[in-house]
Amino acid sequence: MPMQVELVSPERVVYEGEAELIIARTVTGEIGFQEGHIPFVGSLVPSVVRMALTGGGVQHIAVHSGFIEASGSHVTILSDIAELAEDIDVERARAALDKAIEARKADDQDTAAMAAEARAQARLRAGGDQPA
Amino acid sequence: MPGGQERALRRRITSVQSTKKITRAMELIAATRVVKAMQRANAARPYAAKMTTVIQDLAAGGAGIDHPLLRTVEKPAATAYVVLTSDRGLAGPYNSAVIRATEREVMASQVEGKKYRLILIGKKANDYFKFRNYEIEASFEGMTDSPVYEDARKVAALVRTMFTDGSVDEVVLTYQEFISMGTQRVVIRRFLPLESMQTVAEQSEADAMAKALYEFEPSAEGVLASLLPRYVESRLFSALLDASASEHANRQRAMKAATDNAEELITKLSRALNRARQDAITTEIMEIVSGAEALGDGSEDGIDDEPDVARELVAAGVGVPADAQPSGSAASTPGGAAGAAPAGGAQAGSNPGPFGQGSHAPLPGDAQPKGFPIKGNADSMLYHRPDSRSYGVTGAEVWFDTAESAEAAGFKLANTHPKN
Image (cartoon, rainbow over all chains, first blue to last red; front, top):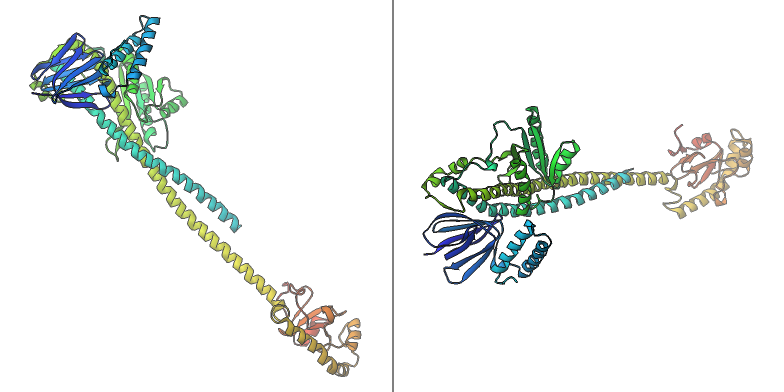
């Protein structure tokens, strides 16, 4: 039994489809959803959401924090920024990552740089590229 | 004068026409932008709706009401106003309506002894309040035309900080709500503190009740803490999108009205121009006609009509009567100078004119015989004194010494003389 998945960013609905299994990472760790999961709301960290699509194949989505809500056969992911793997500009993400790492080197407590680094890494992972 | 008026009218028509081109272009641009803005507002709706759903779930899950963004104060001491206007004008009453509503609110709250803080979005609001020496907390530009979420995040962060650190007790949002293409209206909405969770949840109570209890990760409070700030952003973002759609709709309407007005003005001016041109043509024709008339008096026989025949007549007039008349004139006036000037008398005797006493036949080359200043036109039987307008152009078939002699010979005074 597939689940209805909706990926919603503030500007638009990014993705709508059916999936057998959805794996996301919340602040406490990774969690997987299948049909009939207990109603659940969790905060996401910048990471990659993986979905096993009904028709076969895997869809990767980079999310930059947000929420996941599951109830019955419905999963909704709310994220400030959500990008499908195929929409990610890998080159740009890598440049952003390098810049963030540089900034971290200069100032270890730079939270903005840390966030940027996490975002860039999520992007690169979703884009199918292993960060250095 | 008429030519000048025409030129001025033409210039105005050209300028109105180019203005019309601009307003028409702006109208078309605004029309496409308003559609885009509406689409964006619609696209952003699911997020806000889902947010609300999650909040309902949280309420049902018994999340605490103790969040800084939910802090409600009995008597607010300071209010922050977030004013959404546009950066550019030419949008009809769009900006002024929002600004006026805000100013009224601010004044009312001052009367109540509350403090105000202004957070102005859009250049127009900033210009207005700055000019009037209001205290401006912050102003943003360049985000109203087509707002992105990042803009909402920036403003929301500021507002949130002001609210949570207690420098204001409530935040009010004023903007033009987009209801339809034809209707937008100014709304003044409490933005913070957020309605309590129960209020949000009650909006669809039956739904919330039917739902099973949720599991939260990390905890209901933890989720709420990261959700509420986003909820604020999301609400501000939808307000921004709404305002942007309203702005473009207003601009389209204003520009349509301007284009219509320009068209009307052009029609009116063209009519005035045509009238002026017609007037000028009429005047010109009148001038030509009267000029021709004036010329006509002197030239009917001699110059324009049949110069050769006239010459012959003149020649004949000189030749024939000259033979016949000497005896007559000598006989009728033995003295030869009964009523004539001395010089005339002398000449009349030697060269008596074709029209009897006091007249003189023309001399070769149209020279004036001495003592005979009056020109006679034998065809029209009119005579011209030297002060006649046509004196110079009149060919004289006969010259007279005085007007009386001319009258006696049956000539009439030509109408080309100055009237007394």
